[in-house]
Picture 1: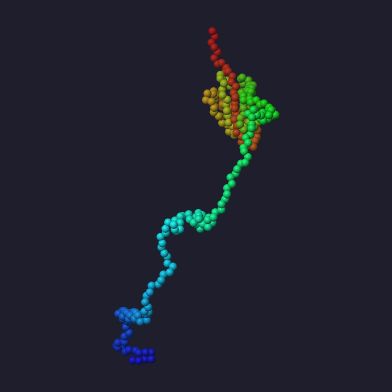
Picture 2: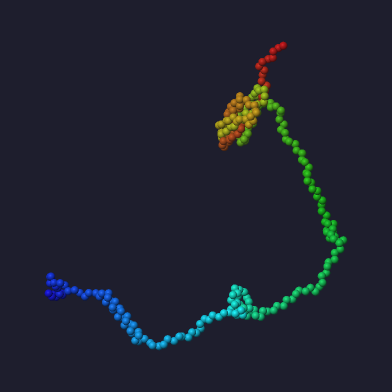
Length: 265
């Protein structure tokens, strides 16, 4: 059945098959035929000239050098480093300039200086006679200087108990008048040392009894307590801040009174 757009097969009729591709055997046969055609064309149109060898020109040659050959100079490693007649600067050394050396010759014979032995040191003696130096005496041991030690003249025994202020507190005057008693004791007692802290108004804000520096000193407990009470009641001049110092109470001792009279004979 035919239509305007093309042929249409009826239902149930087989469709016509298209052309099948070539097999590999056909391709192989085609390649062999093309190769044989090429070989045939080469033999038909190729030249028939005979092959003749080409003459060689400017070819390198190998020759053995003899002992007198200049090629042996190439074994010298300093051929191009040092100047020599065989080097690249050989022409400059073929005719070296000749320098004539003239030795220095003395025409005048040596003249020795004549010096008599008696004149040795004459110039030095004249110099010493014209220059007189003042004599100098080396005093290795200077004279001793006598000094007398400054011994304070104090009475051998204190007439009363005293108070001494030490430290920064000594610059502030003591305003309180203290009457220090004498303690009845058969021996000398050690001073009572009290460390005090004074405020700006001059009042003692802290008082501490310091221990003795020497363990062999004789201390009196009543004297230490009296010194601590006097230190707390002390008043000093006003200042800008706190001041720390020590109050040293030097006690005078007197002989205690006799309590038991000796029995009469």
